[in-house]
Image 1 (cartoon, rainbow, N blue to C red):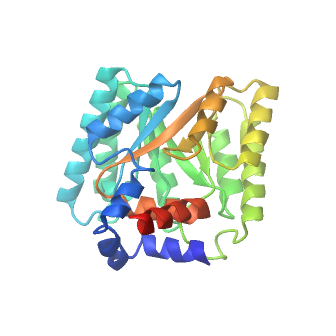
Image 2: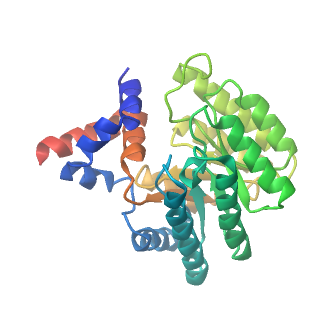
Length: 306
């Protein structure tokens, strides 16, 4: 119930207006967010690279209201990609299609995406399309496939969410296509008609589709986005046994289980840290609170301690 309430609040504009006025909320959010500027994000990326960790940078934002709004988003990604290349960072970028105007029109969104992908491919920077709610799942996969198969953007990957009933079929098809997939559990409020309501079922589905995808032939590439220790152990064992270090990597969020990130990297596993930045931090912050009670408790203690 608490998770459902927090996920509801993550999309509630009235709650966003209240929370973003709290200075303590902004301070606590910095645990999970690199900062509000490109420079903040690049500095965090360099520090992570220096520790042997890869990075995926996400300029926070979603559901823009006008075509003009998307121009600033595209320009920010252009600058970010240029600086990743210039500084020689081991980093890619992640983006949301609604941040590029999908709610306004698919043509606008795909034009913006092609602009970013062209720039990124020329500079050897990988790009991942983040997955949003189930309202966008099918359209996201269609756009992903169009960009890869019709425009030959082989630097593009996308996200699949393990809590959806459709995931096993999607992962099977994407493995056959040789796709790069970030597999996460899922962080949106979905009805039980579309998603497993119980954590145990989500975890089982995650492990089942992970094993199936890792058994697929190359060039299928899997990014295991999880902080769940049991899933990490199962994945690590399979990667070790089948010598899949060039076919898989672990991904974790900035500010969460940092010592475990370093342990995995020192053990020889590729580890990529998802580093969000930008002023539109509220929805991301609330979804992180919903994922783990410890995150919410940290926020509450900080709030009353202030």
